[in-house]
Amino acid sequence: MAAPRLMHMALVVNDYDEAITFYTDKLNFKLVEDTPLSETKRWVLLSPGGSAGCCLLLAKAVNEEQRSRIGNQTGGRVFLFLHTDNFQADFENLKKNQVKIVREPSQEEYGRVAVFADLYGNLWDLIEPSKK
Image (cartoon, rainbow, N blue to C red; front, side, top):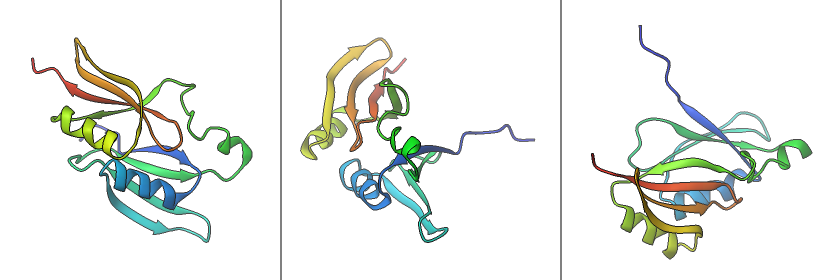
């Protein structure tokens, strides 16, 4: 029997299309699926280019409580962690695409890391893990 695995992470967004554009155009994510479920709801999955695992599931906010969480699902902490094997190229891509850099690159025990914000202000770590 296979062990459970994490499939998708819901990300509350203001608008499906603007989020798709940001993640595909600025972060080079792939649009895995975009299926209408109703007139107002869609099943939208995005994945980093080299990822075969967990996807972002875009969840459009539908009420004031959900809208209040857009960009702050973790109370201001880094929310998502994007691993890379080419930190410099991916960091330069963020700058070229005018993605907001919150913390410039630094070398930590676990690897090279920078913090950036997505279009809504969610914080992400871009990490190239140390080779051990």
